[in-house]
Amino acid sequence: MTYAVRYYTKTGNTKRLAEAIAKELGVEALPISEPVNEAVDYLFLGNSYYAFNIDPEVRAFVSSLDKEKVGKIVNFGSAAMLNSTYKKVKAVADTVGIAMDDKEFHCKGEFKGIHKGRPNENDIKNAIQFAKQYK
Ligand SMILES: Cc1cc2nc3c(=O)[nH]c(=O)nc-3n(C[C@H](O)[C@H](O)[C@H](O)COP(=O)(O)O)c2cc1C
Image (cartoon, rainbow, N blue to C red; front, top):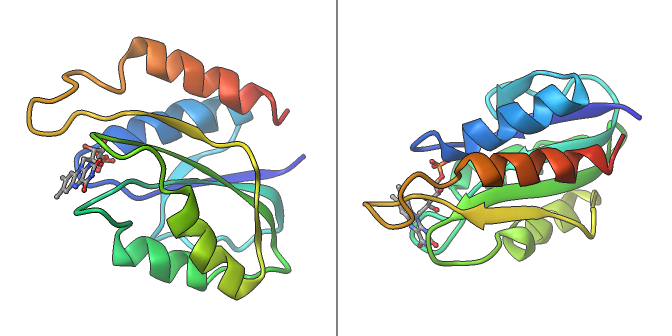
């Protein structure tokens, strides 16, 4: 199996999850400013909610993906209140014809003192467990 890991972060939470997942998969966690140039079975995409939506940069990144290169997108991330960005990401992935894996990883993310320290050590451990399934 081949993998790429990309993330978008505003306050560092998604980056921490991305780095743990990437380490488990033996690849580098890169920001979405780095295009996916190689063909991969799975693109792990870390993203989050900001004002009830995914960031426009994430939408632009997904829109720019080449369906010949990306087998499936695996969604992961954290948020303070909302549960999952899956549907938002899928709506864009559908426009470029790239499938989303059914599974995703989500945990709470610290925001303005709520869920302090999340993702915490346990969240990171769970993210690593999640990544192991794809090996
Ligand atoms: C500007 C801003 C807006 C946010 N809006 C939401 C929101 O609408 N719903 C939610 O559940 N979390 C919201 N959050 C919380 C983030 O989703 C949460 O802190 C997440 O862990 C941030 O990931 P990051 O550090 O990788 O950017 C917001 C955070 C920021 C910084």
